[in-house]
Length: 319
Image 1 (cartoon, one colour):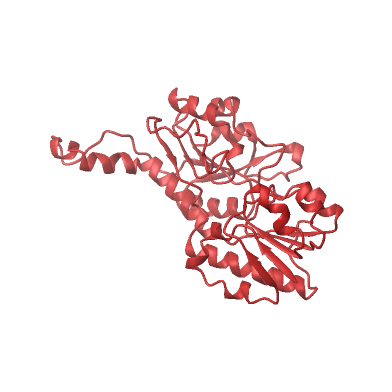
Image 2: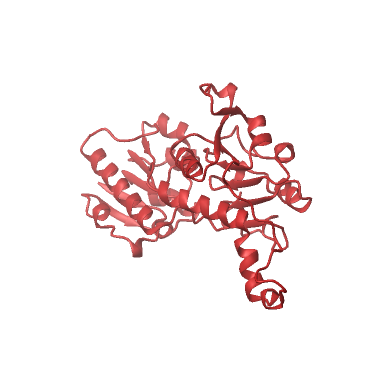
């Protein structure tokens, strides 16, 4: 059986024990990366294809004559044409819950950095302002406590609930977004999306990207937020209209934002938010998931999935 890994470099394999995956009874062809023009020829005769961020289009899938399993080194499935996979009876399996602890840690690093103004005060300690101060401390920036504030979670899955649990430990009031048209069950700690934006001090996004929620946070939604409100996005960049967010930050319509994702990654053509002059904005380069422990769990989970598939056992699958 032939297997192809399209972008192995994206999981940093040199730091990991990949033997559990590579020792499977599969003849592996491993590529560090795969440009779109190479995908067809690389997967044409593969039985198993593993990918992290390389897209598999309808064309790619249709011409793969032996393909039986597409495995993702990721949770999101938007890079796979699922309809094409279903048409060819190809199983698609995503990774789940492998990076929860890593992402939660990153979310709260962003929140704490923004609410304590940690980078601003670190600079104040080293740029001479502390030395010149007439007092024992510097109080140039407003610091706010989390206790008693409202944390609004958009996406009540594994990650959203894990982030919420830390919020509760800080003494925050946790609310989840309710979208009646999506048949969310009603619960006392749910608010309709508009109300959630209006009432939350921090809004954190943990929902998948779909064709229906592109620009979920746009100009109108940002205007609903408190002027002191903070937006956190570690989910997918296209959930947020980046030009609208830039305008809101410049005009002081919201208090700040912490992002780990952008609409195009890497942002090789620039991005409206990549500007050091923007106030109270922290951007990290899609690193929330990359703890060593999370990536090791990812490799092991994918390996177990492929191994079960080879034995004809039930696996986690989206189609």
